[in-house]
Image (cartoon, rainbow, N blue to C red; front, side, top):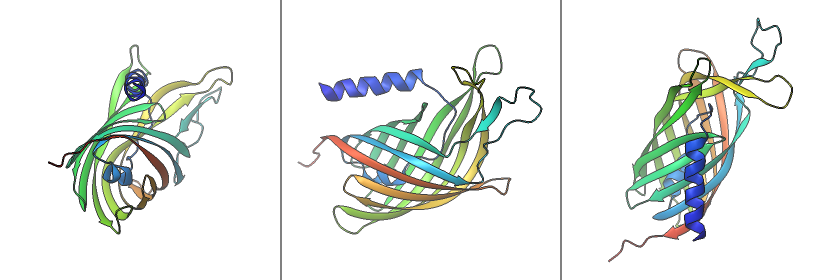
Length: 222
């Protein structure tokens, strides 16, 4: 019963909350998902050439780029012997993840929506990407891996009047390619990723920690 309620709550939240932050999801937890239902909680810290500045030319100086130095990440995944489907929230941004994997190799793709509120009636921008993952299982519980990705990332431009509310105005979109490495021990994973903005000399560095709760395991053996 509790598992069903959790699934419904996450589905409703994902449909109602659509923000602007969208970056590559975890390679480690995609490969680590057990056959069945998994819930993953964690967060990402970013550094490098991040855009967190006021927009010039605004009299009130309240509008700024908010790429962010960190974000939370929640995911509910349904894993099968060679496939994973997941519903993910990066802060308040909904995205879906789908892919195939084996013990040593995987490929995942993701898609998210970034809302543009500059016009009457919000319009949508699309973010997403694809990631290749190569993994070596040192033991049943301990695994190491590397990843390569190409993505269309986004972050938000906000209006902070300094009183009571922050309004998201529109997303900033940028393409990125990069690579990463990770370690997994049981449900815990630590992951480092490097991203290079395509068309600009901006380098971004990501450090991600996640923990997986294996809610229900499905047995496919005969």
